[in-house]
Image (cartoon, rainbow over all chains, first blue to last red; front, side, top):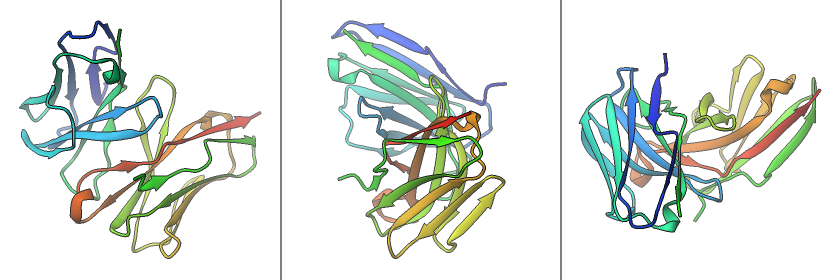
Length: 114
Length: 115
């Protein structure tokens, strides 16, 4: 049983399009995250939700909008896609919000914007 | 403003020998450190962690050492096995300030263990 799953695994789209990535965790965790791994391989946090409430919002363009319909799901919607949005996006979850919580990662979604 | 740095992009080791992966940080607020392992086309998986109140934590073949004064940590894998070949990420978080509740990652070190 996959703990943190993401769909789709690969996404190829044209500039200007709008796309969504879905994430689900079956661990019963309270906190979920979105990370972006860019071409230089750095993993950088974008957003975090705790009990469906947005608690971390890094300096991400407002074309990116996370949505958490319930504690088990955190989706990422991206409007007006740009070439620079090409990256691997990872969803993660942790039992609670705080600094001593191990985060569990999904397999990633490779987004390619043409 | 890379707060967590892994200065070795890659490391090659013979099976059975020790692998030592290094990580440096600059933010003195960091007080919890983690190592993640990542295989191609998979997400990072948690390996081992250490709190700043300790200087060593061991789990089987994996040991993490923390030198707070030098702002340096290292991961030792003994003995190394071919299945350990992966990208290893160092990460850090703080119990307060702007880094609270989030992980700051290094850029990773590719470990290759040769049979």
